[in-house]
Image 1 (cartoon, rainbow, N blue to C red):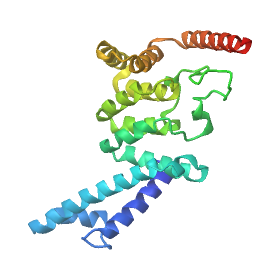
Image 2: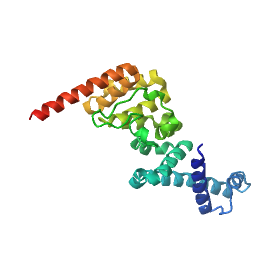
Image 3: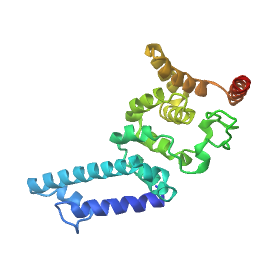
Image 4: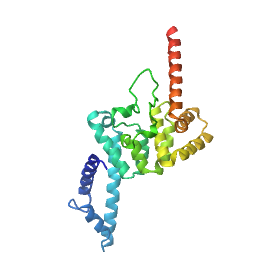
Length: 242
């Protein structure tokens, strides 16, 4: 676990434990010992307190992530990403919807364009020289958190993918989660199954793009990029005539 994550997690836990009925001076070891107390009431109180503290911690972390200021202000972005990492460490299934909503949350400028320099003349889904499957998960921390949560997050990931539209960063991030959890063959099968029943064209398009990312080679991706760039330039030239 990252040192910053450990520090923030410790701060959160200290605050929550201080608010528990079992006493501000209690430690995690003390709480666990109460679970094995002879007194049934003490055991039940300890159990309820631990569960309540976890729920409150997760809810507070999710609220912090949903705060637009925390996500966009450079000074707070590191703390927001630490909250993301903590949710992954906690295997917080209940965080899946929020994490997928902000799945493209960057931890450095390079992630904003998946390693490609920003260029207004190029389409937003340019992947660059290397495949998205080669990027270290540690540099794509919301994806990493969802992978840590595991397969219970797949329904949320699929829903996020289907509403991605032309957001190729979102498509790529969702695709990476699918391939990490199911493998490329398993992810491709999942996407094909979804395409069999999905009739909405706006939802089918990102599914097909995700499938293309999995099945195409980097060379195929580059060729497709050039085709799209050529189409954009042609359309731009046509508009300028009028």
